[in-house]
Amino acid sequence: MATDVNAHLRNCGISAQKVRLVIDTVRGKKAVEALGLLQFMPQAASRQVRKLLVSAIANAEENFGLSRDNLVVSEITADEGRTRRWRRFGARGRFKPIARRTSHISIVLREQG
Image 1: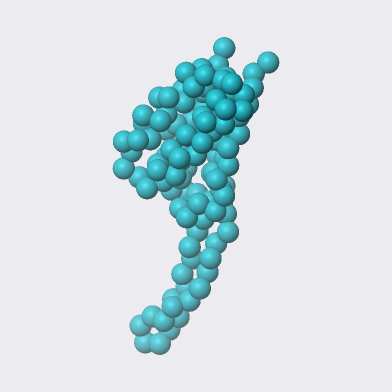
Image 2 (image 1 turned 30 degrees about the vertical axis):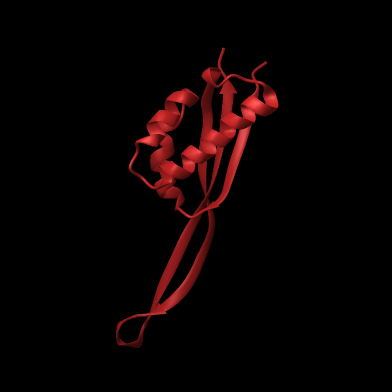
């Protein structure tokens, strides 16, 4: 029976659309290989995803006694979180709406073999 290890990051300060560009490169890869890829990606979202992956690997080692060499990123998703909205003054006294988007990132590691 394969053991699934979950980790979640809530209210990440990066939009889900930008995070999905990063997680699409990691999905289906071995956990150690994914760490190497994320370390050298220039996107800001790669730092957040890497921290989450390190946490998931630590959960697998400490709580389930699994080896990091046997772990595979089976599922990883980025869903939309809350959006903070406010208005600023623009040119000629008009209001300009501002929307700060957040995301919820979830990762599932599965033992291979």
